[in-house]
Length: 294
Image 1 (cartoon, rainbow, N blue to C red):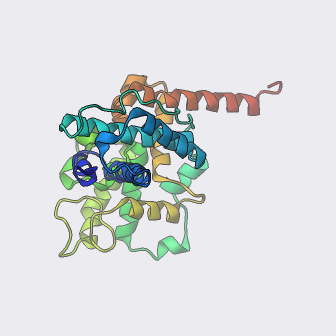
Image 2 (image 1 turned 90 degrees about the vertical axis):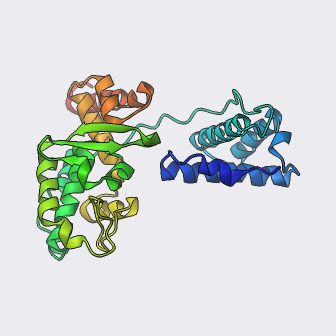
Image 3 (image 1 turned 180 degrees about the vertical axis):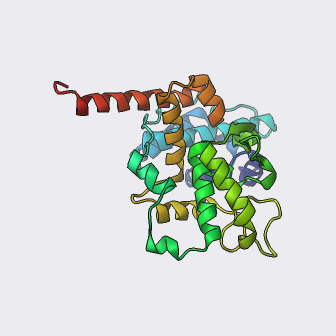
């Protein structure tokens, strides 16, 4: 029996595309390493071998966060093998891995946020079709105003947006659905794009239900969104920074952490708690910069 990698990847169909790519690469790297050690059957992999593999990754100078992700992929893979009766014992049970570094997410400064959402006169922007400009306004307002993941944004359909009710229905990680409020600026921007922007981008090959379209009339991708930020932002900015900024501003404004968790679509409250640390750091930074005896 082989390692059945492709069957395992197909079992991840409900996961985000980025997760599937990462897990496939992580498990494939382990399979290649095991092959070099003369092991071609997952039933012959034991716990000691897995621990040796994690130690090997450490010698290759992978970060603790990356090793932790690879260990998670391996645990999921062997659990899948065990569930399908392809191995009798799961050697990855309770496999320990170093915890990832608790890096605080980057929050956009007010000037950076203003440059994205309220850009001033720009010769390069003036050359863009009005439809593209309206689309960019709409997607940026949604990323910040509703805290969407970029994959969630790109996957939106026309029917997911309720302009009258000022809400958007989102399909998040693991196929979980949630309904998120839209800010007033986002509602206006999306309304302008839908009524007088999207039709100009659409063509014969356009998916009929897709909300955000690129200049070829196709459904936008994460790379397309990144290009919008590259064009609009005065500093290098990732789409996820808008989601981080949204969450941090909610916590700064006194929102209950459970509410923020639900709005973000986090499965665990522990994931959301990072924003309390961000807010604390922001308070400390403000104190040190403003207090004369700090």
